[in-house]
Length: 96
Image (spheres, rainbow, N blue to C red):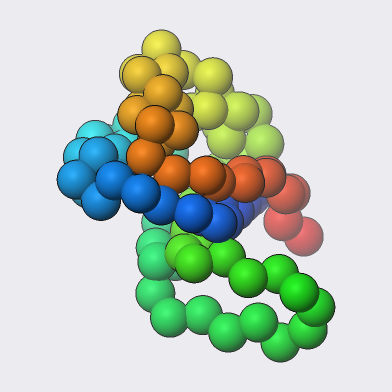
């Protein structure tokens, strides 16, 4: 069953680092069977106080593949890069 990683960027202060992160993460996601469903396009809050400045949704074949991407040696330095450039909340949810 597919799994979806949802990343909500709440603050960003280094666009150059974030561009590098996006470029390098593209390959790492693909290596784990993932694909970007939404990657920072326009969004609209329909209810609540949630107000991210950027949203990303990545589809993986299953929860194990999503976890493998996030816990991989290839992604570890990218976590540090992203955290040095932005504040981001990330969750994974199983599809139906």
